[in-house]
Image (cartoon, rainbow, N blue to C red; front, side, top):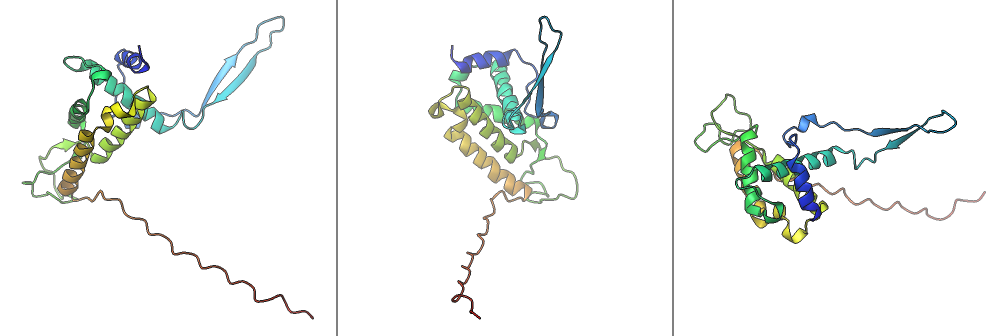
Length: 205
């Protein structure tokens, strides 16, 4: 049994895996390990293990939650789906499933606020997952897949269909919300002029 299948079996036994709980992530910087020495003397020794920033980072915690959430999704899939048989099409199903938990208002073309970045009044347009959230989620899942033994060439989160879907969501939400998602090009600082060299040595007296 490979590491991915073992991990999915572990995920199937967990019930608290939801990438939507972003605000509930708690990070711990230090972990104390207490060891009591036994023997003729009744002294005790206490050592403290400090976690590295990578292991305790918000990103790593979120990536683990996302991976567990996807494992739960595969378990609840009808029929149940193993990770080895997961394709880009199943990833798209997962992303569309997450839309029901979205909190971003995406105006339809017939809405009077279509393309309005700051609507002055409420409207019945649907709530969706924001493109930025989906893009970041796929990035974390793509990394988690390979960290748990998956091969880059079979990574369903890097499939062309997934990339095209994210591009479509970005363009649709950009037009519907009147927001540009294009990255602003950083202006390169002007090249520094070389300092003028001293013209000769200082005068002698």
